[in-house]
Image (cartoon, rainbow, N blue to C red; front, side):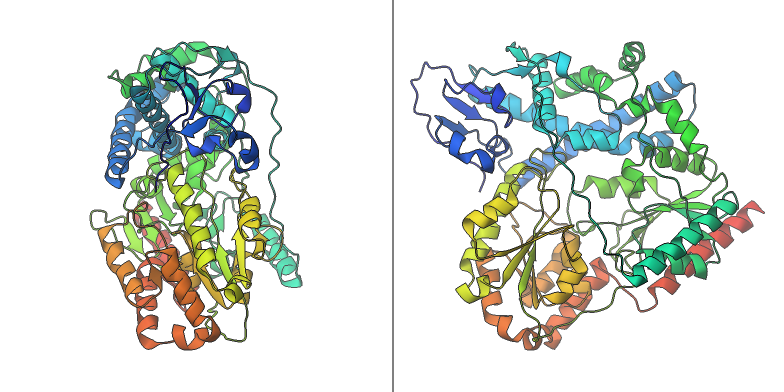
Length: 608
């Protein structure tokens, strides 16, 4: 259920203050307040905001159909902007790269940027349509920042201060002249690094991979299929290197951030002249894109080109699962390789792929690759998509049902507090948290005592651990990066609960781990073919449409998960689903090595 607005306890003529972020230095608590969204109300500050005469604005996205409409609008705008930006960047840098090259290089930033800004624009227009006399405080332009690269642009979208910058730009464009304040000094959240326990096996594996890197350096420019961020485990990467006799090998270059210099206003003014004009939001983008384009694509592009020249010069093909998103020099190198005739190979790296009806990262990856390896699903309108054993699951062993084990594990997720891509609204994450707690409340007391929640290392400001400890102090907490990895925790528990669609439920089902699933169909739209496969899981009692249904099944089957999980009908449904969305094979390493060698041999014959 989306956030609803309670009646403000104010006189009709009183001015209402709009708070756009959780930065309390930019609130006027002396006035009645309207919070633009739940992201303004941090759980850790509940004792403060709960005392205010304030409420939350309703979402402008009333239905899933509305969300899908804005997704389509953003996609159309991206396609209009991309050729204009490609022409501008070619002229500015004195290059003649193809539109595909620029799609590879700037495409990820562009779709995140358009989605992000469209959401901020829609929300501000909607709230002022409802309350024309709102007042607010904006961020001074002296505090505005330009991101270094795609990764920093996305990371900034996690922060309240950068989102205040985005909202302030919309205020100005729409003619709202509010007082401005410079940014306060804010503490930086420390990122928690995940540490692997150095077992004897891991030590030997690291030593072997170090030797592989040395060999790859020596044969750097010999033809091969070169990879980065493959999503294979290190031991599978080593096996593939050996089975292909070094044809499939790592690039071995570390990501380069760079582009820390001064902003060149002259270059950015030249960029603005290439962008298409338009009405409303398109006119807004024409104004702000030149201000916000990451520095690595403009002032720092020469640095990226220099680094790309250090990469191997003669690959037959380039393979990656997710370096196509944030590794800027890799993208420049991959784009240049494609222009010289090398094939770009991509691989799925998330459990949403093939399931979600609207998923921009999937669309982008399929668009830039010559062949894209899914985890089993097909895409009728794209011959590029090839079902294959999932890279992440290759080499994994089955776990199976075992009544001797104890415990119920639920793997939580954490979405951004501010939207970075449609259709994943922050309002939907509020609903997600409510469903999590409804599931836990519906468990029998003895079952809840066996429940542990595995949290991501980064909670993105949702205070997830504190919420759980407050609502259910008896529930155990696992934090990513502080103990066992996910697969080890999965193997140790008796029953796994999946409360959202992402990679963890695929890992569990493919490992034949007893699993109970639920997610909100009103906030997560799936494709038609995926719906058919999900209905199979629903029919046999693995997937449920409410947290209460899921809790009832957990209460019932926990004592004997073996009998429940191993029923033939349930196993057939699991296997059919995994064949389409989490495919594995007993000889997956062999299948991948043969695939890579066939590409190498074909490319060699073509160039002979």
